Length: 289
Image (cartoon, rainbow, N blue to C red):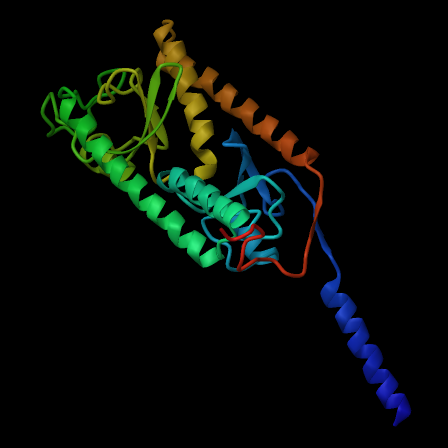
């Protein structure tokens, strides 16, 4: 009997050690074994990473969705904001702001996760409504456009020579080098204007895109946004300098390729980090005011 008791005690001890053992996550280039997918720079004092949501749900925490911050999740490194690469381009900005306000309320005001989360949702709601207003106002002031591309190809033959853009714009995403970047309804564009529109486009390549604009398809993954922006900026610049579309596109692809390689180097050089047994907090670390 004593031997049996000692054996059971040993089993319990070994099980406890195994449960409390710290798991270490190593960083690899983008792929099925990766955690980090794309570094989108610093924003409001945070390092913003688009991460592999499927990997996190499989290996770290199965309830991870949309994004995360270092107050809600103990596995998110200090001052990093994570954006799930499963979300589409039209959810990126709202998710980013959500995670920051949620994190700061938990860190500096001692909010519970649930109260901070609800507050962040109200911020999102305001953003979504402002996006709709901005998109509607922008479309109202636009002139009619021709549904053709750079070489005058009109893919939907029954369209008139000029059309009015309606319900195309979704989010005023950014302004780069004087170029307005919009997230747009790619499905509607392919259905009603130009079936071959894919991922993104610019006003030099497509005559239905108003001057000095870049369009990003709302349906692409958040991990592809910046690659598409960099490609379109370069392609637009090359075409404005006189290069034909095919040559401009080929050269612009090199910019996107270089960015992908640079991101992979960043991922490789990030240090491994440990995972704690408790993966999340229900209450922030700050002092409640």
